[in-house]
Amino acid sequence: GLALALDGWLRSGIRKGVAALSLQVPARAALTREVVHREIKPTLHTVLLTESTDLAAIWLESMQTKSSEHADFSEAVELIQAVRNRSRQGCGTNSDHKDPLALEKLYWCRDYESLLAVAKQIDERGYAQRAARFFVAEANLKLGHLEAARQQFERLEKDPLVRAEFPVSAILALERLARLSEKSGDTESAKSYWRRFLEIWPGLDIPLTEHLTAREALADEHR
Image: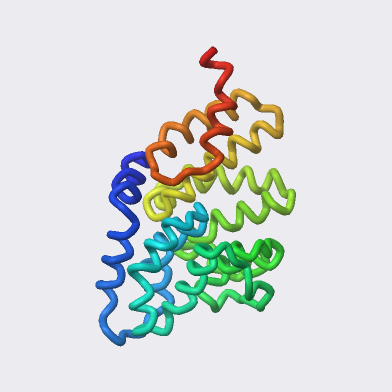
């Protein structure tokens, strides 16, 4: 299931996915909102959620040439450049639901209040809603709405369509749920979430501090 999807998608390299995307868009074709959602967001979200400068560089290597051919790619390229450069310059500008990358920009800018306001204007069904789910749950978490965040991460992690389309969102939801369980004092659930997280994440070539945190959380079981 999820482990296989992650292995097949990320271990084979984000370069292949982005390179394939760059070839799929016909020359001089206008990039519609639907294309932005279905073609750009899965790989863009991987870079954005991991904040991996290496993945950002790979993404840009394949996509920057296309951005000169298709104006609608330019904002996605600017966002990934910000990730690569660890820059939040330009944050503070207004975004609304008509911008296909509004939530992604607000997430990177840590503007969680605005993110939730924009998310309320997105259709509650379909691909756009699934793409928004991790950002909405994370915004609630950062704003201290812990029960809302917990419920949203649980629904996200169990949704087979989110797992298929945004596997990194699903696996990071396990990490968030582990931390929320720890905070609430539910150590058994926390260990279960950490264990599931560790079953998958170490197989990905993306170093995160969550590896160490997860192993520490389970250390008592191995003594």
